Image 1 (cartoon, rainbow, N blue to C red):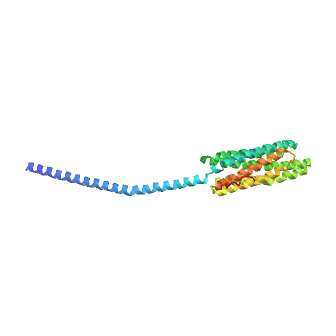
Image 2 (cartoon, rainbow, N blue to C red):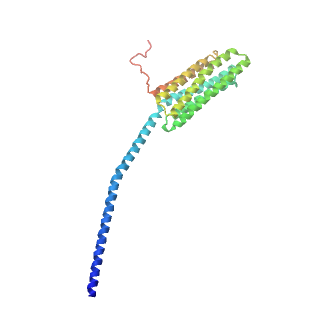
Image 3 (cartoon, helix red, strand yellow):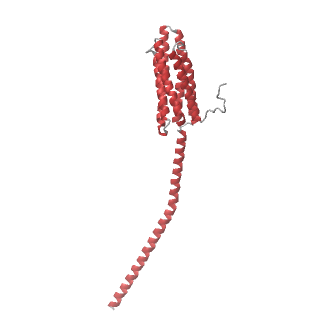
Length: 267
C-alpha cells in the first residue's frame, strides 16, 4: 500500500512539472510574438522620421548654399576695393598741395582708403562658402569707415570756414551726401546677407553703392583741377564704382553682351 501511494505521488508530481513547462513555453512564445510585432511597427515609423529629418536638412543646406553663393562677386569686389583704397591715398596726397594735410579732408581720404581695404577683404572672403560672416563684418566695417569719413568732411568744412576759403568749402560740402549714401547702401548690403535676403536684393545694394561712389568721384575731381592727384583719385574712384556695379550684376547673373562679327574694328 505504501509503495502504491509513493508511485502515485511521483506520477502526479511529473504531471505538474510537465504542465508548468508547457505554461512557460506558451508565455515565452507570446512574448516573442509581441516583440516582433512591435519591432515591425516601430521600424517603419523610425525610418520615416529619419527620412523626414534627412530631407529637411538637405533642403536647408541647399537653400543656404544657394543664398550664400557670393563667389561671382568676388573678383569685381576685390578690384573695387583696391581701386577705392588707391583713390583714398591719392586724396591724402592732394591735401598736401592744398596745404590741408592733417586736416579733416586728409582724414576723410584715410577713411576712404580703409573702406577700400575692407571691400577688398570682403571680396576675397566671397570665394569661400564658409566665410559669409567675414563678408558681413568687412562690409559693415567699410560702411563705418565711410560714415566716419562723412564726419571728417564736416570737420573739413568747419576748417575751411575758419580759413575763409569759401570755394573749397562748397566743394567739400558736395562730397558729404554721396559719401553718406555709399555708407548706408554698403551697410544695407551687409544686413541683407545677414537677414538671408535674395541675391537680387544684395546685388541691388551693391549697385546703389557703386552709383553713390560715382557721384562722389565727380566731387573729388573738382577739388583741385590743376592737380594730377585729384584727377587720378577721381579716376580710380570711377573704376571702383564700375567694379562695384559689376559685382551686383554678377550676383544677378547678368552677363555682358559679347561683340559679334567685326563690330569691334574701328573704321
